[in-house]
Amino acid sequence: MAFRDNIGPNPFGLKQIMNVTKKVGTESDCANRTNDVEAVQKLLNLFLPTTEIFRAGFGSTNGTSRFDALTGFYIFKFQRSMAFTGRTVTVDGCVTRATAFGYGGNTMFTIVGLNASANTRNPAGYAAFMASFPITPPGVD
Image (cartoon, rainbow, N blue to C red; front, side, top):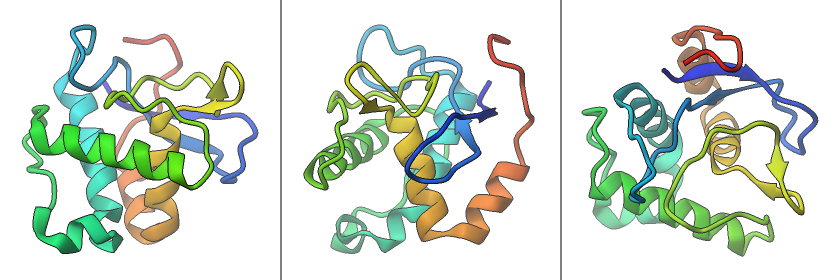
């Protein structure tokens, strides 16, 4: 189940993020739990309307809590856009549970970037979204 999680020092100033419990994406090791997929879709939908790709006519994610091609497309596009801004990210179309801001060589977790984008581009929506999920201690599945 997706949950609010405390996060250590990060360049975005986030004290908490919405984190996933299991991997979301296209790879065979992605559990795509409905609650985790829902959290990723909602994070995307909080900032997608401010992006060029959204204005090109792709629209919002479907919000069914099931991983689909559009959700995968937006994850991949998000990762590529972060890479172009100079952030170190893994471009694999997957969202992995964050254990800190980044990992190995300061590579940023995608879920941290999704939270940061949602918070920056839609602060009120992000605050309401964060309030709608429980705080779950790390390691609880």
